[in-house]
Length: 168
Image (tube, rainbow, N blue to C red; front, side, top):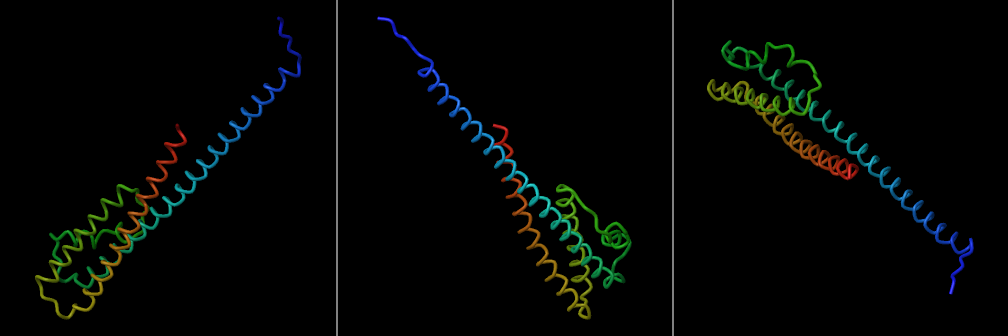
């Protein structure tokens, strides 16, 4: 018994195979475009959070400068706050990298500790209201810093997920 195939019998499986390959290619392209969209979206969010962190650090420096000027007669030249107060770089807005933001945050915390020491050691009742307002303001800034920092880290994790997903 001899089997005979005609052209119609061969064309149908080829058409089905071609349709399957085209559908797989379309699905892959959709997956790539979704991945790129999410990566772009997370990248934009990361940039916004980084700018907001920079702004918080700048506001914190401004607040430290203002209270330091009020406490200037109690700050001697050996105090780190004196260097902070007399450095013009701390009075201008600078765009910092992620590592610099974290480093600068801890530096500002050190300056706030110095302000607390001066306030406590000199028993400054006449400056009680401005100093209390300063510490409330700093507490609010720290809360915003931590919230934004957590959101920033979440966005970085999301971006890394989609980047790893894209590379697989």
